Each structure stands twice: as structure tokens, then as C-alpha cells.
Image (tube, rainbow, N blue to C red):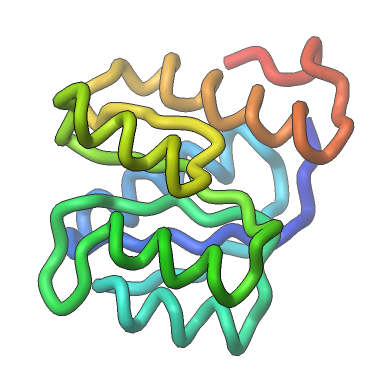
Length: 135
């Protein structure tokens, strides 16, 4: 798959941003990857750069992921947000869906499954051929 859009990774852990960034480059080809270390930085980056897709952690300092998701949707109701988090209790998943997340991926999911889920999300929303989304 060759996705040349812009993806914003919002996560307070630098090693997670690096890991997911590598997955994105391997899976999607040539996306521009932006990073933010907390929700407020993510909102600022979103307003400045207007990325095509946001990957958002839930548990972060300054502003948590659910607050960030709500704020992003206020700014741009059409923004595409995938929750990428270690938190997976039912209420958190439901809250993310209610507030507009298009997908929910656990960080402890095997790398190949994370890659496949992100590629399928990109294929769904950007009309790429899902057959090109193999890990």
C-alpha cells in the first residue's frame, strides 16, 4: 500500500511513537508522520498541520486521550482518530466509539495485527485497495 498522507501520532511514550512510526512506514509506504507527546500538543499539531489520520493514546499527562478526542472532534467533526492504547476496558472502548473514534487498537497486539488494522483503516477511509494492505 502506498499512502502518502499525513498521520499524527499522539502518545506520551517516545518509544511507542518510534515503534508505531516504523510500522506505518513499513505498512503504508510514504506517509508523513507527525508526533505529539500529549493531548494538548496533539491538538496544536492538528490545528497547524491538518493531518489525514490521528493515532491517539488514552493515558497521557496534560490532557488524556478521551479529552483530546472530544476536542479534536469539536475542531473538525470529520477527523479520523484511531485509539492506540494499552487501556481496553469496555467503558473506555465505548467512550472512544461514542466520541467518534473509527477504530481501537491495543498496543500489546502483535505488530503484524497492528499493521493490518491500521492499513485496513486507511484502505477503508482513503479508498485504497485492501488487498494491498497485507502485513
